[in-house]
Length: 194
Image (cartoon, rainbow, N blue to C red):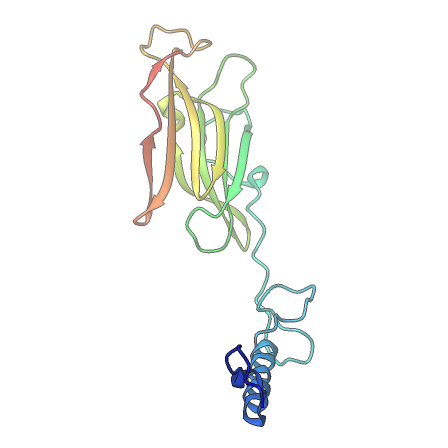
């Protein structure tokens, strides 16, 4: 018998125990893949109940409060109030959107001061739950947004009572965020002349 110059490759011969171990491993992989399949696609919300499951679907969040129907704490002396800007978002993290509205009296001329109000939805409509800027501060609002749970605005005001009301000369960028059960205001940049 002639001996080979190549070492014996006994481990390359499959024995029944090798096939059994391979089959068991493959069965485990297939079983695990079957258990980790994603849920079937449906038109309902994730975690919602489909027909016949016996589970109750979570209700859709209520729509954002309507700023156009809210009663703002403005003393307009016979003139009506007008909403000049509005934005919505979940400010307190409860899953329901709030509306932030900039409102002022509808004056015939000049630049009447604005108020910035946070509205929530009630069974009867919308209600003011926080005032971020009082009209008595004699400020007007430029850029305005609700993003990532915060309200940002550019406020325009006056450096002294002698500055004409048509021409605000001070600007401040501010942000309000719900913290500790109230809205906390922070300055985004130092107040500066316009």
